[in-house]
Image (cartoon, rainbow, N blue to C red):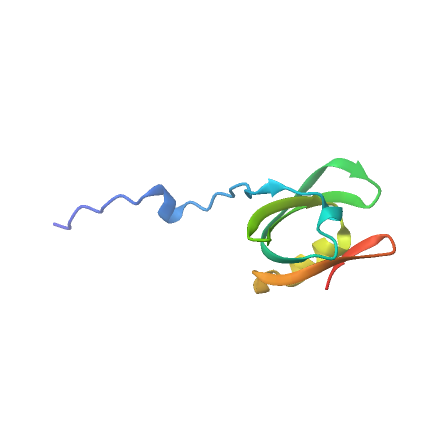
Amino acid sequence: MSPEKQPKRFNEFARETMPLDGDKVKLDDVVNREITVLDYRIKDSHFKKANCELCMTLQFKLDDKISVMFTGSNVLRDQIERYKNEIPFITTIKKIDRYYTFT
């Protein structure tokens, strides 16, 4: 007779996507300031503009405070997807002409 299998705890197998916590900050308030990127999420945007179907939520630390910002920037989204395995990382967001980029 085999011993009875112990039930698993939900948090041992569930991989729910939790919302990113932190104070909301506008992207322009972060430009040219060093931040530490902690996490991100990409989902469909509520505001459908030309070339802006997706919205990225970026969780970061600035001045020892955890914050989040929302952006439809294709450049930032492409960069975060390309380098997601490097998170957490320190960066500065720059505005070049009409777009934003990590530097």
